[in-house]
Image (cartoon, rainbow, N blue to C red):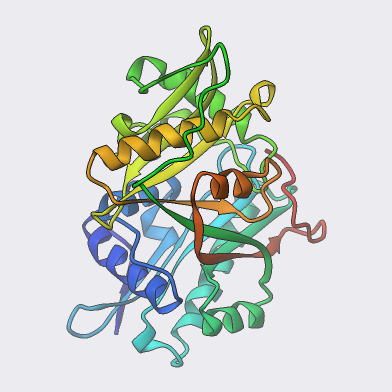
Length: 320
């Protein structure tokens, strides 16, 4: 086997590997090449030092590991990657995750030695080998997420609250939509404020973004809430990436109404299903909103943390 850093031309191989890993854990092949490339380009500071790919003699990718740099004022270093199911049990996973955590501690020591960070890695809930590996390296399960699926054949029929209107997002509201997103997610577990340009590359300027299947609610000139939709790797599905309601408009059925519009639009665009991921313990009651919109749990995903720094462990963000 040979090891080298990631290069942008490796996005397809990394995507295929991660999809195989997710499927082996009871999930599905949801990642797209465009999404993987954009995520790594925006969140990994230096491919030469913060990524590691391991290849078979025939050039097949056997394992991949990446370490993200938290945004300014952030607290979480995301560890992305894994080992092909056919190559497990040979020490690759232990070596790779050990390297990822060591690299995260090095980044922390240089950039924020006085702050408490978390290294985070995730896995499908049906993957026991990864869970055992994480436990051996002192990672603890801290949060569960649901991947949910709904048919586009029918919607809840929920209507917008009186006085609000919905529109398809246009580039003219990019900045306002970013500000609304930051505000809406400020009290969500694990939220980190990304730089505007990096958020755009992952969201509104992503090649997978479907503005025609997205909706933004306005109260006068103010954004009250939004649902942003993307192309999924599965051609019969659209994917809801972000749902947010600003605090003054919560509890009025706004998210349900926007979801109904997005589901209907996805059906008209030829998608038979629509999917999303949600924090199982969302403080805004998002799981219930989605269930009432017709979504049902399809898979579960688990986030694991290991502290970085010397101020003790915490499962809650130090700063947002």
